[in-house]
Amino acid sequence: MERGRSETAPAEWLVERRHWRLLAALGEQSGTWILVVLLALVLFFSLDTPSGTFFSVFNLQTLLGDGSEIMILATGALFVIVAGGIDLSTGSIMSLGGVVSFIVIRDLGSHLDRAGQDVWDKGWYAISIGLVVGIAAGAGWGAINGLLVAYARIPPFVVTLGSLGAALGAARLLVKGDSFASTGPSQFTDTLGVSHPGGVPTPFLIAAAIALAATLVLALTRFGEHLYLIGSNAEGARRAGIPVQRTLVKVYVFSGAIAATAGLVDFARFNTVDIATGHTQALIASIAAVIIGGASLAGGVGTVPATMIAVFIPVVLNNGLIIRGTQPFWQDIAVGAILVAAVGFDQWRRSTASGGAPRTLLRRRG
Image (cartoon, rainbow, N blue to C red; front, side, top):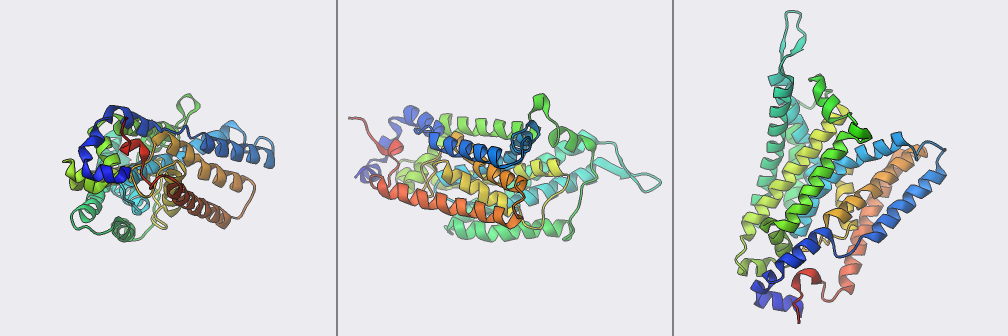
């Protein structure tokens, strides 16, 4: 019934805008159960692993560093899912962004001396340009995804599934299929990858800043408002005068730029770019975190804080299994099982809700 009202009088969605936008961004639910699950995993591995291994300052820094890339990736995934779409290409865009950045930094930042050795005389200049171009490459690939979804009306699953392979293929072409380890300026890795200001890994600080900005965008901007409305009812949003197609292109551009940013953080941490798998595990973990955090694959629902907490469930699980000496393929099985369970829970949750409608967006006072 509420969904029907939203279709016949879509302008009513804007009446309580200032109230529900902040609630939607911060979450009506506290996400307490997600935090309980996370703390239970931490407690289990703390007791099940040798003393001083899992529960230690070094491992805490490792967890924050490992979680940073998935936090960034999950932010982009959340925006797309809130708008009713899906982006399966972000792992490959991570690789593409890293490769493009590496090439720019290498070509701009050094020259060969008489002995044939690289001399880096344009460190931060080359790094800055490389980061910008790498993120722009991700945004450009996202724009292609968005145009195909919004204007060609190809289902986002099909578009981004094809894009998953194409982006990774493009990354491999740029480096001619060879894995590489960067011999770039030391400032790149030392400053952005392995530094710990105040004991906190720099990649985590970058991810936290992006998460905070994403929360504010969803809460305080018209763009964030439009994402929730489009995900809730695209036709109703169109009747309300919202530029649905342009907004969808923008959200995929954002997703691509965010994925490339995650790729640059990974590049800074490990001084290399993964062109073998296209960060498939990070992709799965990020989507799992978004669904575990309360977002619905049907669109219109999702919160940044809950997603950020949920990110660390697969991260802690992977880390704990490694410390226990569990064989690596069990880690992949565990993360995949989490994703399936999260989607199953989402289906059950929507089937028990009143008509599956996101009540935060569609209810009316009185």
